[in-house]
Length: 93
Image (cartoon, rainbow, N blue to C red; front, side, top):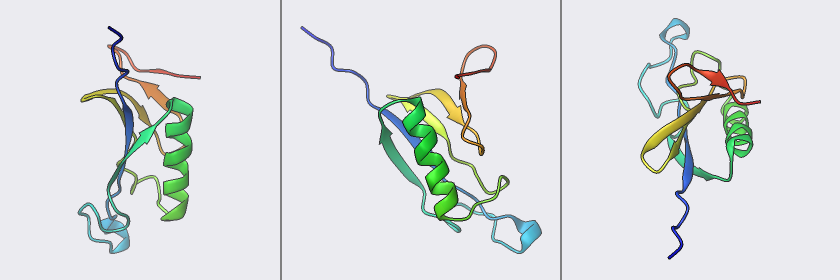
């Protein structure tokens, strides 16, 4: 019996920056979302599009967690770089 592959998702979220008079809670500048992705490159593209769409700065970006099932396997930083979650962080090129 074949095992069904675990779905991979990426979290899209932001917070306001109180230094710019923005409320610092979540769901203020942009809606929090969990989006299904094909792979790390797709997750990076989706994150960058979300950041651009909502004109987010680096201090606003709180999303980017890539999950396989319930386990975080990588993170997408503000610049779109994917960081694998291991004992030591390393980049996925």
